Image (cartoon, rainbow, N blue to C red; front, side):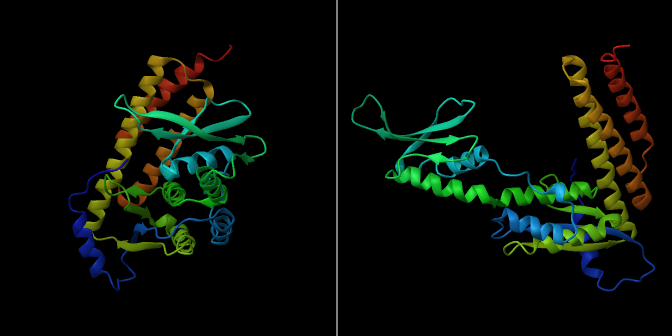
Length: 300
């Protein structure tokens, strides 16, 4: 849902020029981008900061699980102490890894010897292994760390999910720079307040006002964002029709996405005069397709 805006650099000049703006000039919204530094934080602290800022608790990272924490620990220490970690087949109750040492003693290639193993009880979250093995103790330390910490990646996902909830538009294909409509200006500043309490992170806001240049640039970005989402949904629904394996719950969620898409189009139209006529027609076609598939599950 992003687009290359070739004249994005001209907006920079617009921002620099807007130091004091005539109050009569409408505020279109804000450009935002961020820099995360030392952003890992205790999950309890993140929740406290987030809720205190008045933000939606449901946007926070999902609760950590022992399994996920162990997998993160293993990924961070795959070659710790010159040894490798190899996972055994999963069982319903346990995750098991072997600590393997690579031995080069002939021209026939390396041989492998298991040094130790460790196991995670999926129910209790207890990790057991050989306390004399430095690889296991390193995994244990990392496991304890990831059990309680929200990583920088999770913070980044939290930011992008929050911006999505604000109907933000990506202004470049590589991401990281968004326009947030003025209807979410208060929420954006709440997010800035929360994120800047995490490590040395910064969230930058550049107010955009209704000039011909700014409006045209943001209008193109918003229109391209809507068009890209319609194209993605069209491909997805076509795949559903070919596969014929999606159940009613999946299809009903797509109907909800169509309504969200209409709401975004209406929002952009009200601020930027983005035309939603073609989008409405395309969404109606997709809705008809989904409703036809849903009808096949109707016992009547």
